Amino acid sequence: MIPFLNIVCYKWGTRYDAEEVNILRASVGRHLSIPHRFHCVTDDPEGLHPDIVVVPIPERAMVGNGPKIHTFSEGFLGLGPQDYVVSLDIDIVIVDSLDFLARDPEKTFIIARHRASRSRSRGHGAVYRVKVGHHREIWDRFIENPQHWSSLYPGRDHNKFSEQRWLEHNFAGRPMDFFPDGKVLIFRVDCAARSPSFVLGRQAARLGLTTARWGKARLPGIGEAIVSFSGEAKPRHVLASHYGHLKQAPFVRDFWHL
Image 1 (cartoon, rainbow, N blue to C red):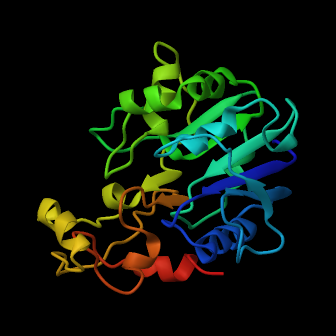
Image 2: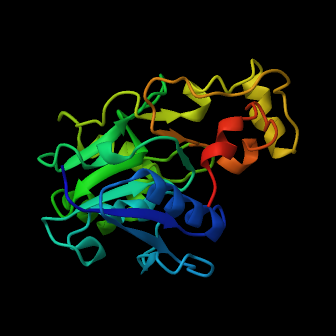
Image 3: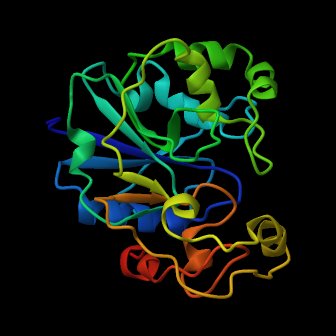
């Protein structure tokens, strides 16, 4: 087991607020028994819990999820090549022990396997671990011309750059190491969350409407520890009601809080 972990999340712009970061920090604290430090790379630290280590976001022109590639830079967070960093998306719900994140210390990069059948990436960027500086070429190559690479690897839902596709490009022809299957799930895929009319429902969500009328989303009970809300919906959207094509998820109230 790795004896100490550095946890990092990224917050820039207006999509996420300080409360959501604070909830993530509190959730990690409840579910990770390994000694750790929580960092937030951000352009606005106002309202963050005082125990969070604030790191300024890189001052480079990057679009989409470009800032997240900074995790692969040499000396990230002032750390050395013996240190490990776990990157977590802010829009996750932690439902069980995170100690699996500290296993397999010999692996310099390990990521959640993408569970969406039509994904163009093997890895799901909501959760991954890097041994600092061991894959620095992923950052160095990107930051030489971020606009160029962003145009080649756009994401979904108006995201102008997909870090998942960029990682896939850099690992093309090479194996990826993955966390155990079932540890990191995707809400819309794995939690019985979608209504039948999900295409119309995605559009309805933008109007404050919903096509989800019956049933509730639920955890599948396959040993999951993290549920990722990748996409437009966030945990707070399904906390107490349906949202677009997605059903209300009572389990969010149980696990997603300070």
